[in-house]
Length: 101
Image 1: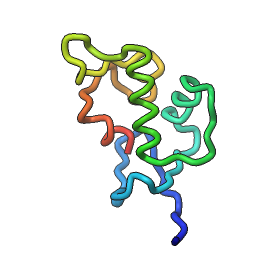
Image 2 (image 1 turned 90 degrees about the vertical axis):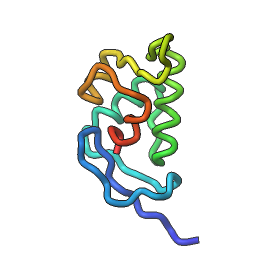
Image 3 (image 1 turned 45 degrees about the horizontal axis):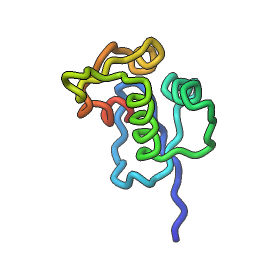
Image 4 (image 1 turned 135 degrees about the horizontal axis):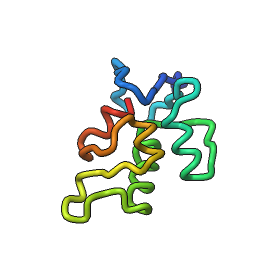
């Protein structure tokens, strides 16, 4: 199987041109606030990430910490750390992939 090269990912509006395979490994930008948020919330520092893994981890954090509107679970209410990572206080579930990428 061909090796997969890492792709950079950041917490800003910088878009990646190609991420079609959610199993492709990605790298965070140096000093990424999103990576720091994930490490803080999970108490783990994985050396390899996939887009699917990042999104799954965020989903678990959102569910465990109830960072959603109980009347509309598609609306995510950012805690202080998430708001710093995403630079916003709330978002819709459909926006999260675009914000991460």
